[in-house]
Image (cartoon, rainbow, N blue to C red; front, side):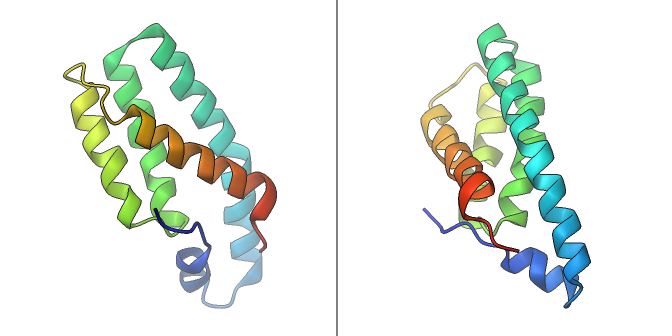
Length: 108
């Protein structure tokens, strides 16, 4: 499992600290909402809506330097549509890692 970081965002910002702050603020606001919606849809067992939530969340993996972990939501999004939840634990583990990072560890 990779370490969550802001390398991608910093490279994209090319020294523009206000851009980094804007993106990280957006992540801090949006990620908890996305995660909550994912769990609501999971409880409803609506496979297409679960896949939609995974699709929305997976882009945040890349923004936070988790390129290697991006394979998990990519596969999970496809598999959940077939009713296969085998990757749920791995996906949740990364969700929790991101959530912890955004709440506690992220330094802009």
